[in-house]
Length: 334
Image 1: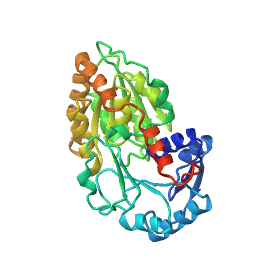
Image 2: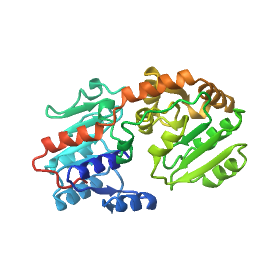
Image 3: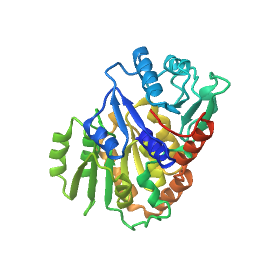
Image 4: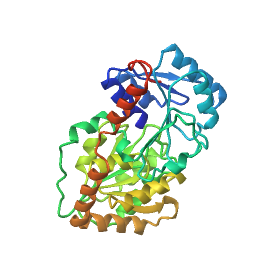
């Protein structure tokens, strides 16, 4: 989704966007096509030498101004191959996993981002660090002047655990919310098209005492975040969207790289860090929900802090930098 957000901003600057993917869920591909973006499926192992070779060939075919790479399977060798093809390269990163960096631009939009993550880099590599560069999709732009109203007693909960949610953290969260004992609670559950646990989530939702709806492959996340009083979310890139929308969030860690994201959100008083999902008890989730929904002063503080942390201009800032650093005007992005 952060690549999608950057591609939208590139389009808005007059450019063209092409996605090269080793895996392409149908829902995602339909969404790209609806946004006039091309999707090319590469039948290769993501992050391999063959993958880098094919991406380089594709970028040269489209005369791409920039290649944007995002994923933990892409390392130092992958960057070197693309640079050897004389391509301009932006590398999304979260915690310095690649070791050496030869990309022209490294973008780490997290609040915990530090220059020390990238001491082993080329002299020309430019670092864009922190939520100032958090890239948000176009749908969030119309909420820039909106201000959240804080209900004395919150009742509306948004649950979003990522596209595939392979660990079924959504079900873990739902069971906890059912223990919260809050009358009139409304729950909106966002699931991706590749979620393999949809049947069990449907069964749990059917047993909810309050209103509970499941939204599959939704494209109106900003609207849902504006509707909700509190969110339960995986501590990934969605955290910065929640902060921008001033939505107090309870964050569950589902991968190692999410630990510092959750910690940073808590340190900036814009989120509650519940830690690893695997060790959580239903009562802990219920308590976190009840405490936050009942505490309007705390929700107000978190909402105000979120907008200070993320101003929603990150995608435009990054696009301007790419335009200025590119050898030609924006034409394509793979």
